[in-house]
Length: 290
Image 1 (cartoon, rainbow, N blue to C red):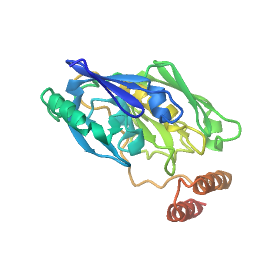
Image 2: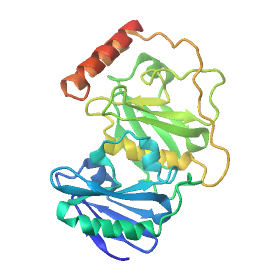
Image 3: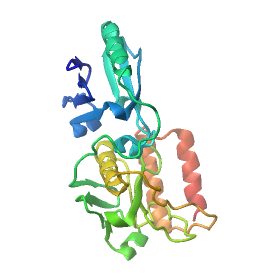
Image 4: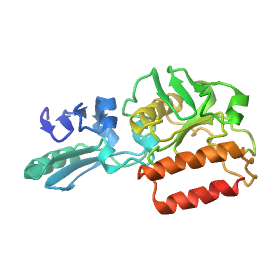
């Protein structure tokens, strides 16, 4: 098509085989969009396009990617807030007919909704790094490194020492948004220990823990997507092994670690990121582990 449709925070350029999404870098643009810069999405990676009424006199053109087509959305696993969804183009309500036109044109070119056998959308490029609460995570395209913080890391992580994980040894990535409770990034082994239950993120040397101001979405999610794209097979084949939970008692935590987690939970509560009910429930869970 070759046309450009500009909305709030982004512009979509429609081409014969793809949509090029360019994100603005303005002060009001979500920081995740600024970090992504631009993304080329092949039409074969999109399974559905809709147009719906938005908030405050806007209309939303929304593309839904095929399962398994975009490493960013696979890593996000449905945890992104609506305002951070890179597949939503918000437009003034008077452009609804224009949005409907492009949606109908795109629908003629889309494929099916079967899971993609490989990633079709390019991941963020390495090298990358971000600061978590208990350490610094870095990825050079070949290996992930965790360097523990002298003030935030648990005694279990200090005993284990700084970690280095070659991509060849990994089978996946688990990302839990820092905007929720117990946000973290955990690396999943390609060959997990038989019968072993993953330790809590703050005790697991294969995980870094987020917190207020640490591991922000715009830093940790592109990082997780880049690692996921590096470890996932590029073609058909069996999925990598993922640790399966078993009924083995979790290790008891150090009382100092529990106190620190409660303090950070309180910070999330004071910042309005955790409700009163979530705060009370999670605090009770942590206290029960003493």
